[in-house]
Image 1 (tube, chains in turn orange, brown):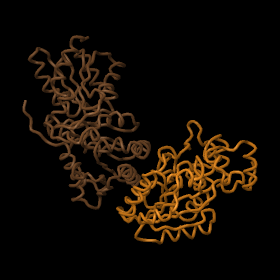
Image 2 (cartoon, rainbow over the protein chains, first blue to last red; image 1 turned 90 degrees about the vertical axis):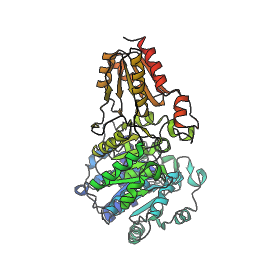
Image 3 (tube, each protein chain N blue to C red; image 1 turned 135 degrees about the horizontal axis):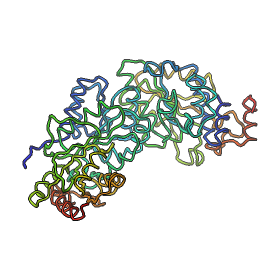
Image 4 (cartoon, helix red, strand yellow; image 1 turned 90 degrees about the horizontal axis):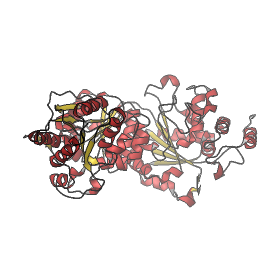
Length: 260
Length: 314
């Protein structure tokens, strides 16, 4: 998954590697272990659902969709090219498997809530997973949605905050302090769980615990490392929205156990 | 002319209940204004399919989008100023771009809101919604047309915006009329000038046509209830037959319906025009009819514009 991300962003010459790498383990767990989904089930509501609120992590989302069979893996390197189905940010109308267009931050959780209401009203016991960035917690709409989900007892919504601690202009705590983040969600009526979002066993266990919780929505605050897996990208805010050059690309691919 | 008066909102409420009965997939959202927008009746009748979002319009639009992703046809209502201004980005990003089946039906549009003043009097909502790809924009002229428009957008897939006023308006269309999205209706024939009215300005256009008749000018009156897609055929025919056009709208003159009609005619059949509209100023508190007179939105201004434009007639 991480190799796909590096290949795509390098081929495109632009994009956001950092937030894709930090959330790669979470996305992998969801698409290949936790969620029931498949291209054949795409037109059915009777499956699990995924909304990528942090739309700039499109590369890792596309990697998961391609590896799940929604479109050919070879198509991944067309990211951000003219006429490609793989837009810089996810588009529901262009890409097979993408449920919702996102990119303007802070909007995904509202959509997840609406989808969860629709599933509940159709009597479907399915879950909507919503992956959010930590920087986007500064958007007021996130907290409108947080209030809504708890008011309507949407226990079929599981939000995951990719808490990598960095945003474009620097550390989240310097740009717009979020802590104590768990207390904020708790005050809004959510079941709050924490995990190391780069530890696969913890990710799987915590997602399972979230799924079992009933009566209120659950948020998982996932501590992650931005740029995880590529030494010179780790905790480096410079790689939030920058593609690696050829030399960096080769080194990144070597570190991720592949060949450039 | 004397017309019975009726509220557009009341008709919206009625249409929603009707839709709720016939279609199980219709869901309604409101943002703490369900009494004013008249979605409350649907909420009472179908409590499982009505969700009050509180005073949080941005979240309401996103929730509406999510319900539509889940296969529902969603009606989302609040005042027009909040639906199109406060939640513009959510409408653009989460509803229009993904082309979802969400109908934004907004009330209290324009200056006829009255006493609430300029903070609540949107005169740029049509411009905002019109500029978004995939969006259908409808401004019904009266209560019965509102009812028919709501049923029509429910049948058509995709995002739509319907604009309603607060006050009671004259019933000028007939219950037997058929509402067809994208089709303007000609309410009165005439070949000296075409009066193109929008929403609450259609009735003043009909009154103006009577006034003009006394001066020997036979005015055609068109009810342009769909703004997008614009019925350019009907507009071009009116321009060719009449040789001059007046538009009348309760909206800002900047990027208003007059602008769109002028642009369409400039490409097809350039025609002398006058535009009756808000003159790029904010409104103020007052009674609806006082405000319409204060800002030059009555039959008087339509007559003056018609006389002026006929002097430049092609």
